Length: 197
Image (cartoon, rainbow, N blue to C red):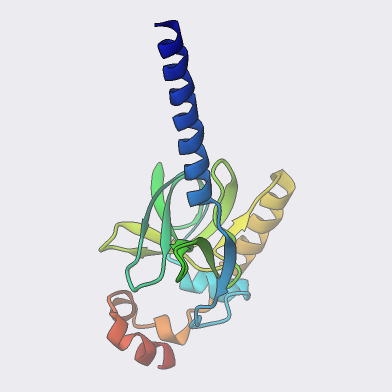
């Protein structure tokens, strides 16, 4: 009986360790793949960034809540607590969607796909977000790179907020986004046409 009990405990511990290692290997990528999205404008210009964004806010990433592929590319969703609105009127927790996430390569190994070298959001960290709302999914998609700026301390937050407040005085709406209804409701078939308009 004693040997059986010790054997059972060892088996449970072994399965737990295997399960944890297996989970870690699923989340830990074999390699990072950098992919690039064609942006409709130069979002490194803060005036264009705030002109394109429907919401600009400071928020804290609570946790990852999902992963979807709307057009074949991985996208990851996070629950984010809104702390301060700079543009828009978001409240409480919202879902922020980020291009990128985990995928499998042709050999079945886990890889992490990053778009435009935009690192994935980290739980517990604070960011300045610039987003566009996607009604069909009820989430706010972050503009790559400039739409997810990590704020590591109060000084970084103050500097980033000051720059965005200044840009909000003279926003520039990209040409491709001027017909908002057409742009927001586009499908894969008309995206390239809209981006060239």
